[in-house]
Amino acid sequence: MSDVTLTSLGQGRPVAEEDLDAAVELLSGRAVAVLTGAGVSTDSGIPDYRGEGATPRNPMTFQQFLSDHSYRQRYWAGSHLGWRTFDAAQPNEGHRALAELERRGHVNGVITQNVDGLHQRAGSGKVVDLHGTLDRVRCLACDQFFARASVADRISRANPWLEQPDVVTINPDGDAEVRGVERFEIPVCTVCGGMLKPDVVFFGEFIPPVKYDEAKALVLAADALVIAGSSLVVNSGIRLLDQAVKRKLPVLIVNRGETRGDRRATLKIDAGATQLLTALAERL
Image (cartoon, rainbow, N blue to C red; front, side):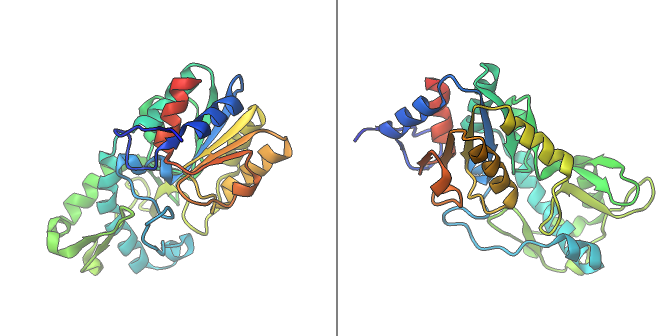
């Protein structure tokens, strides 16, 4: 058995040549919609919540965030420090491969469950951010939007003690546990004084219908669906898989480890998303 070895593209398993051949045969001549999950961004240094080796986490829910000032203090303190990981991350070869496939007409758009904005920075033109984006902050009272960088500057000025290394423990998922969080000064809307929240979908919060409709439209306009780096634990991904299966579209899943959609895929490849997407860009 021969393998496609891409040693510069992360630490995932090499892609078996016969798997790559099967993927190329499945997708050749077809307009492809792509659904991406956290596994696409791991090679950019953004840890995966659910992938192999991921540390179990218990993220804050939307209801908790709304209900209690202390929850918001804990969220904003940890999120502010974790934001640096996302802000410093750069697109990897997998992101760039998808952008190139879109430019060549093989990909009709990317639907992503990620909130890091790396697809856009890699050059993808049609991106549906199902779960929002961390680089924007929204006021829940007046619906004003702010750049995350400007809010981060305000937080740093109001909470200089956060820069002390002995008060912070960084978690593998890019969030952080902050000691002395009761001192944290929460940012508020500079327009109306209302509650601010990063423009992302929290656990327990619904995806905006317009976003799901945009994602569904991409799948309905495609001839095949590729699911890359997602375990499909989140129902939004399963619903899009349902649409593809209902239309009898070929479905390729590439992920390290099992996913909820494996039995319904036309082809499942157990490998790193970066490795396979880059190889596809070279072969399609």
